[in-house]
Image (tube, rainbow, N blue to C red; front, top):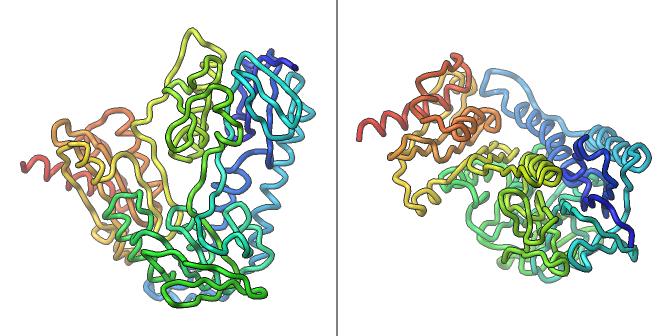
Length: 455
């Protein structure tokens, strides 16, 4: 059995090996495309597809600003090739560097499976190490829809590499992948029909935000809410979806109902590693698992499925792997996320429903984009910012923004929550550029503070 100082399973965030480990003998194991989900099939390529869709949507609505603009079609191959002609060389270059340019590291291709505590087998080869970092990520899942296994179906892993843009696309799912891809394809001119089991999209978001998003998104995409198809079938090149007595025919089908942690693929249980009920590897705030010498990060262990969080977890894990007597932990109180659909959504902290369920006495501050100067310029009538303030402490416990630039606008609130600034301090003790769109956040905070003081 070959022995290493450190074994890393997964080449996404686990590939961020610090220089302090250069004197160790390291094995890096990867079963799929080098670089992980974000680089190859997730965050980066999807946002490169989103941006042209944003431009296309803006071109459709120039008239509200007095402009004569129109959208005349998308060159799908050109868009696709622009994306992957940039991304694929990065993945290939990273793999080549790890395979040939790192003296202390051996890149092992294959699926790693635990066969005992800190012992692994990779396609018949047995290896062990004093320290193991599991960064194996997650994978797409399929719902139990009759006929689904017998039709041509795409997931987020494949839909961005289609040979041609479909005239008609069906999507099963209502989360961030489904709504981002729904925005992309409808933006490019495809007729999109989206099926979702619940009656709102983005159901994990704040209820007010999810409801308004569903209403606005439904103006562009045909929504079939409260159901998923009872049957799908392939008839030649056409896919038929049977739903509530109707038959919907499409050219392509995207299934985006969530992702599953890969703890089962690495057979974590065989390594003595404890799991959560949903299959994730259980870790503490130092990224340590139940087995001494084994750590886990990213989608395989947390429920967020966010690259920026996986990167932060990697920094903590590598520090603790290298410095076990000076452990560091990660603070999860202000983990933000965004949905790059149209409208865009950004959130941090608790939703209103979560806050009230947890017993917080919260005061809500709101501001519509259209109630600010830049919102007037945009002729925006649907977007808003919402903040939740703890009445007892004055601290912000949640913020939710729906509308253009939401993922950027939310940043000062993230910092305020992370560093313990009160809503009154961030609303009244810093400058906000006038008439920038950041005034939406300022005014939502001021509204909340005023309501708090009026109690």
